[in-house]
Length: 400
Image (cartoon, rainbow, N blue to C red; front, top):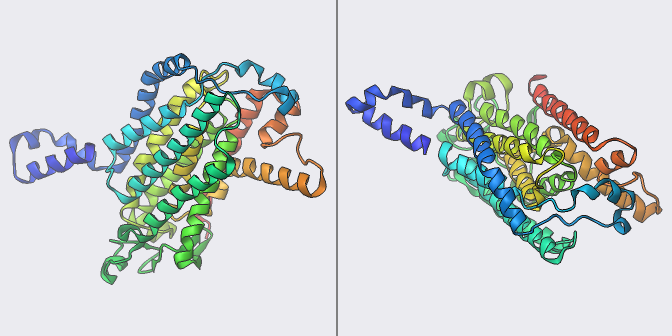
């Protein structure tokens, strides 16, 4: 909406219409920084306004989060017994406010914005189905792991294929002159166009490897992995939400820098694409929505995001990392999500191979709970680590 208003105003201003001259403040709507901040604030305000109604509606529908029994989780059931009756599916609040804010403040047909928003919505819908089955059957198990993974792969492969074949992103079907000038596709440094299959890392000023079409399954793996990692992190009040804020903020800044020729090409030497800056608006909408959701999700939580929110957020962050050509940096910026996922992999692997557990319980936030840390201690300390990971990820952009 705001970009459309700007385009309409600019056309009138260039034709000398009097109303356009007196409304020169509309020139603000062209700037990504203004629209990104506006998207964040709008998503936050909408969350605060709509949140109480969403909670009441979820309670009236009796969509309470199924809590695992003592037989399943032993001592942890005592620690989480107070959460019984808390409504789930709160991720609809995050999804709704992000999409509304993006439609108002961003250019929704921008390929980077479109693929991230659609991936988020599709993953959110999958999560909603999973949450609904849990609530309906009053069990902590929803859609089977195999079915969920299959649908995640379908969504991720569609998103990855779109990124690979879209000319504005990949540079395919664009002229050599357009690619070299940065008008289509990515470039890395002066007059150095790179393919969408190139895998980059800030410490290296040339691509590590070019996977060509094999990058499609690689992208799909990132989206599925990130989606599940955020899902595993969502086990304590506000934990995943707070980590989402720091990660989305970092990638919002990366998208903004990557969209500006001087900062990306001349100074930082990171992948540059003239269309990518618009993604910062979407990511800031996610930041604002996460802040607004945290208002109700902080301990003691009034609602949980459920798979509706966690799968959607993970899908959006994974796709954003791919779009900015900073896929590997997600391991650092999303360090908490990686810790959570790796703790589960190591725990399962160790038990199957050695019949021994590494942690008292996985994901790792439950391990610290069982060590005697209060829930708030675990949450805040993980938030601190998440901020440190994000700052470190940004800091290495300009080391060499």
